[in-house]
Image 1 (cartoon, rainbow, N blue to C red):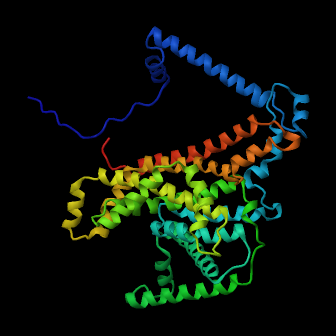
Image 2 (cartoon, helix red, strand yellow):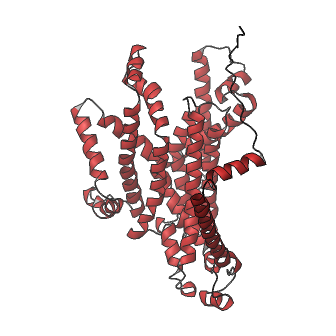
Image 3 (cartoon, rainbow, N blue to C red):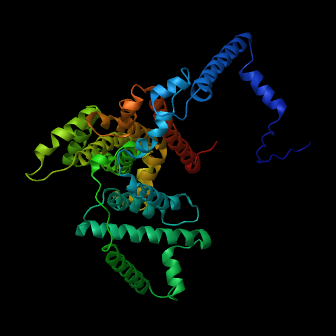
Length: 441
């Protein structure tokens, strides 16, 4: 009797060839007469739509003109992109002073420098990098955008942000080249890699203190001209509001979700009431309440501008929605994970931080990113209360005298911008799902 030895080597997928492609088309699009008819009808509709968009948006479009009337003289059937091109600076930056636009660009570049290490595989301490980006970058970028006088607190936070950004940049280069962290590299360079932990800690703290003192003295000598928040607008303002909302929604949602699941009645009732209160009303109502009712609860003489009030409202509103997303993820974690964490001696916060919460967040990646995308699109509601975000600027084009009545082209341009941003967020969330997947196919 012949014995067949089984192997666990998975079968390799057949290479894609012309035959397999034709087979896929035949199976999915031309498998029956009904599918053939539906395929032909769908292809014809797509052809008509694509042809119409091409002719109107590109072939017959006008790209250079001084007014909407001049566009009509050149082409009466094509799009008038000249108005969008003329207003492109306003669409992206609002009424921010043109001579100071470099500050906005530098702020975006600093954020990119802060976030790039999170995508480099050999860089260590990515959680610390993310936390510093959430809690320190807004102060540095906020001063770049707003300028004006720096108080003691602002100078301290700017100093901490500059030192952290410089340390993270050097740490990333060292990690990519050697695989080590910045502290390991410094201790190895000065010959203290074999010293005691106490001596190593004291040396690192001394280097940190010297860097903080040097940067603090250096930043005291420079400053930027103040730019009022009323001149902020366009895509820049949209990204500021949504970026702060996204950065604060997840930490706030985690705390509210844990509070709602708490065994302490006072904390549980407060968290539940807070969540249900904000989830029971639309965002536009919350924005109106923040700009009209919020100042009434502040002490006399304490004044917040409308932009700060809107940011606070957006953060609280989205933290409540994120709390329910996180709570659903916590409920999806098997009970055995809780018991196993307590069995190995972890307390409540240790079990949540090391065992439970990472699993819950991984499960809820699609819902979390979906909430972030919804937050980005919901920020267009601030145009109703007088802030000229990107939607407000797109509407303002049609009110400009040379371009009066130009509605379709600006709104289509804005829709394309939102699609690109949301598509990138969606693809990145899918990348995270695949990267963090631990299940079997």
